[in-house]
Image (cartoon, rainbow, N blue to C red; front, side):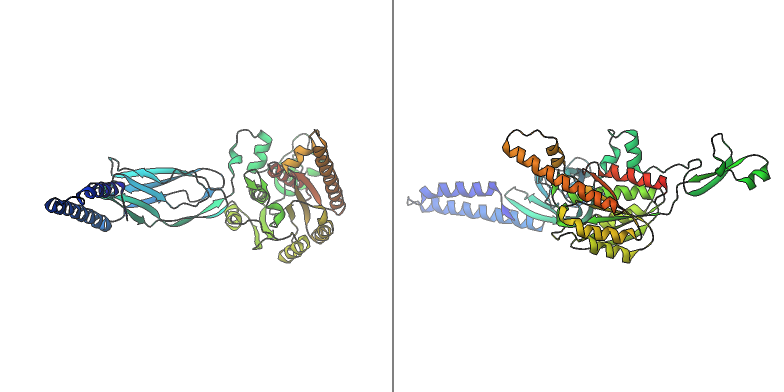
Length: 435
């Protein structure tokens, strides 16, 4: 509890007027003045005592069951109007990564039974968001004091990666098809898995004709195939320091995680299995492949709180760990940012993984380097930057070539284009039967 400005002003005025009285020998007047001061203190004390005995406002915080990083969310605080004093100050103990919530703020009871206050919270980081109690600074009946009242409301809400780009209208039809993971339709005469028998259509190949069914029906019957299901997609996320660099409002690891989860979502839509593995992080994690529409929730809950570490990336150790977890053939997607010193370690990892799996290496390119490669130097310093970048890109291309010769698939793209690129390659491999 702390004194309000009204009480402080009253005491200051009383002291200022009492000072001249001390210079005169007016005992009666001074006695009356001291008595007035005592009355003020007694009234202030009673006002503060009543405030101390006053219960905290009846309040409840309502917020979504899950949040998305870098996206604004509405948090509502509902209070019982009868328990609320006019001029109450609310200070919600939300996570401190958003300084623009507009809190603390004054609230006054509404005419209705419930008073509701809302504010916008925009999480800046994935992981568990810790909300504390609701704190109120309530004025006393006479307005001489303000007392701190706490309403228990502590809770933890997960902050997931942002999937808002799935609903962007700017995506063209092909990209929307890829990113939403629309299920592939059965194709005539293609695919690897038998789907059904049907009437012969002009253009069907002779190898599609089922001669036994044709003999029974005395009309041409064709087999229809679809892309094979129940296959595995394993996502290897580099949790080392190389993806900790900022790329826009997120880190490179955030972009890699978004691409991995969107690819897993697409694979689950195709009725394939999707699993994930984090390596070189502070807490290495292995999520076995799952199947079904609820599988994405399993992956989200297992990966949403991951962040890059300060460790160096160890590809050969990660490959050995993955092979120990599963040897069943799968599409292994390694998402990282390649560097020239990775050559020997990465070649060892690819050689080990290739014995059991189809390997796809996704190399993240920085947008700044992409812009630098197209820049026309304006002075000597910029010319040096362009030359140094060109030399690094040449070494990167040579590493890509060596990986392809070792049997791995390689794609290099910016963080923003990586989800689309990985989905395109996954669907292409599925259609071709290589998966």
